[in-house]
Length: 231
Image (cartoon, rainbow, N blue to C red; front, side, top):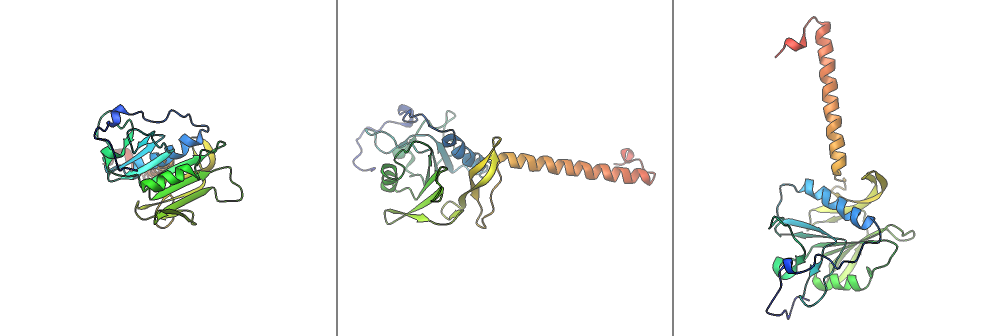
């Protein structure tokens, strides 16, 4: 899909950031938003990755972009301009996303037909589809590209060795909403915490430290020692 490009190729600044199709469910923003929020902390020191949300992926200047709900690229500049990326242009980036995410809501948007074929043609290694309304089939599907065809991976979470993370779903709370969410996992299947959970854990550690200090001060006073005069 990247062959036979014209000599003149527009830059990302000249191309729209998406196809202007509105999301039909808030989950299409929140689910990839949570995955990105976790990465921003988990990979805070890394500058070789990019996670796009509802952003156009351009593979040809004369064709409309593909716009997944979320996608991850590795080996690209995290930030290359203060204005950040307006879109993801393959002939500028020279890196195909390693993972794309589609969140299926009430409106089917060709996630299992046209989009799947387009991602396979581009060479996207992992195609992740989450459908919260499914009852008989798994709500999370992780497909891996093998010899040009996507093969469904059965586990939950699924370990992605090329990414160095696993992806899976389980119930939790994010933004005050308790439901099933998508998360990143380590190789042992342990879920990485959300930013909210990290803040809550830090607050609990501070409270525990303050309680220990208060208990120690009380014991010192019982021994006739004024803790305020120490140190």
